[in-house]
Length: 175
Image 1 (tube, rainbow, N blue to C red):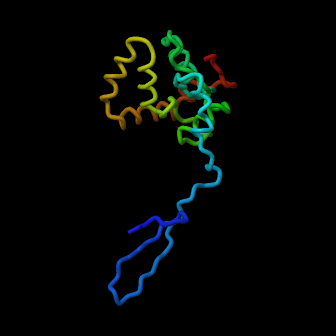
Image 2: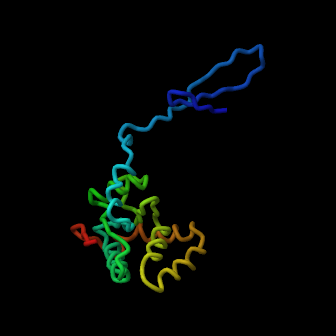
Image 3: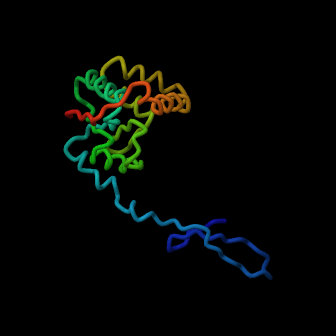
C-alpha cells in the first residue's frame, strides 16, 4: 500500500509476518516541478476582476479558428464573450490557469472565472453564450458522447492548417 508521508514522498509499506523485519522503500517523489510553483489561478485573476465574461482562446494564425471567432462575434450581439489568441502573453497565462501547457495551441479553450473547457466541450459552451438557435443546438449536441465529439474535434484540429490554411500573422480582436 502506498502511503503519503511528510516530505512529499510516497513509501511502500508491505505487511510481513511478525518475525520478518519491515522495510520501506521510496518509490516516487510528489513535489511539483520548480517551473510550476506559481499559482496561475491567482496570477491570472486580474482577467476577471473587472469583467466576468468568459474568454475564448483561439489559434491566432489558423484561418479556421479566425473564421470561428468572426462567426462567434457576429452571433454574440450582447458581447458575452471576450477573445484572446493562444499565442499572446495573456493567452499563455490563461492556458496555465487552465492547467495546460502554454505552448499548446491544439484546442480552443473557453476560460470562465471558475473553470475552463477544451475541445468539443468548449465549442458547446461557447454555443450556449451566443444568440439563438445555437444554445438549443448545443443542448442537443451534448447528448452525443464526448469521445465521439472529441474524436471529430481532434481530427479537424489536426488537419486545420492543411484544410483551411494558415495566416502569416496572429489576428487579434477587440473585446
